[in-house]
Image (cartoon, rainbow, N blue to C red):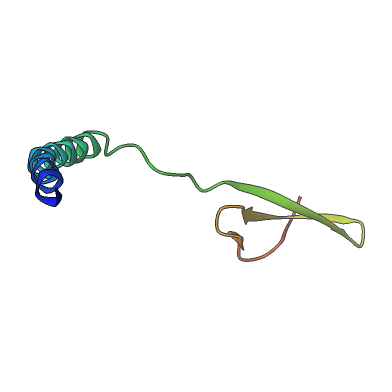
Length: 75
């Protein structure tokens, strides 16, 4: 009884193995053709503050959570 179940399972595995390898090679070709697509872009925006009647701005990176400008600059 066990041999009857084992033989079709082995045949199924042998047939499906080459199909998976061909699918992987096609995916690699697609990735190399679209090399100009980037996964995400650095999103930035200015943060503002008012100090002693002067408005200051500084560039902030929302992607990396860090300051892109080295210091605050007046408007």
